[in-house]
Image (cartoon, rainbow, N blue to C red; front, side, top):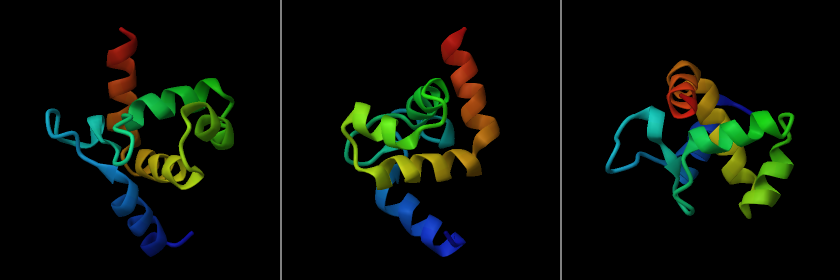
Length: 86
């Protein structure tokens, strides 16, 4: 996927949480599921994006958008995951 395709995927599927702005708490536009929560589940599901989509009842492109967003903001999202686990 190109950077332009990734940008469109993010733009169409990801939004900032209006109550907690910034990449750490970004969420899926249509389901309001936080990216960090999907990434946590994706790690637990052995990096199986299809399983995440099925288990969360999401379209595969929404999960793909969350993973692209995660890769762009990995450090801050990993910090958010660690804070949630503490």
